Image (cartoon, rainbow, N blue to C red; front, side):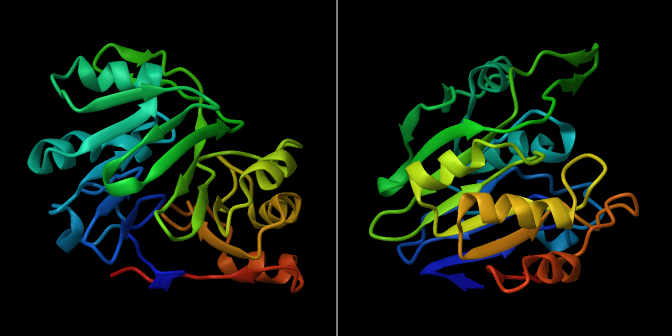
Length: 231
């Protein structure tokens, strides 16, 4: 779906692909193979220029290494998650931290912002430190500003994120249990002051029971709910 000049594809759960008119392609939190909500035809991504990671939980990073290696894609993440992927032998990795603005491919800029969630990385030795969960503000050249909240619940500084970065579209989790549900997400969107919300992180498992319809009802017309369909 075209959203303000950016072709946005939902790959299931919290995984997204963004493509600009010049072909520049970005993945957000890719969990592809093994993701029950991701079509098998989307497991192997091509033409990827950059990958942005909100935090180190498996359902946000299990597709990162494969996509980065097969495409020589740049990785952008909070410092500890960046170090995790550097230790795996990946070279084009940029670590940052909240408030830091980093330049990506072809004039894309990303800024890490706060999120309220845990962040440990699951590995062979159990769960290791993953820094803190975050969200991304992504600015596209001559285009919109998107806010990817990552996994979070509501918090008061969402209002500051809206005031400072003025996102055109917010991608918010609505499933509940591990993140805020649809009703709280509607309150979060109103704090941000955004006009359009794309719901993510729902429906993958029965426990993630929030729905776009519930978000739309809770919005009560305060913002548009843009419901993406799987490829």
